[in-house]
Image 1 (spheres, rainbow, N blue to C red):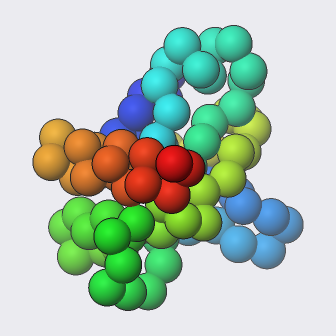
Image 2 (tube, helix red, strand yellow):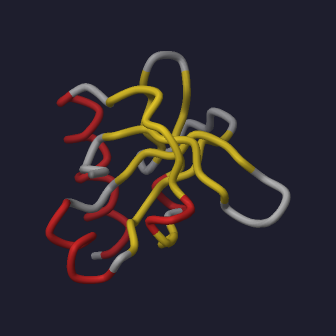
Length: 94
């Protein structure tokens, strides 16, 4: 099952499939059937953007998607990147 920190390819709409950083945990997924994800975006020098392996994920553009729209996991974010994403999510929601 998809877990926090995984980077699967996601169907964000009918035309776009791209890597996303999963921000939510398994418990959230089990309760809702959805995942909170940050899409890959162009690098911007904002505290709510997370860099991992040369890719930037936009926590400020986080959205929920059905678990059915998440494909194969292609990578897993480092603990450091996961912690940065958690801090960014707290930053933009406080």
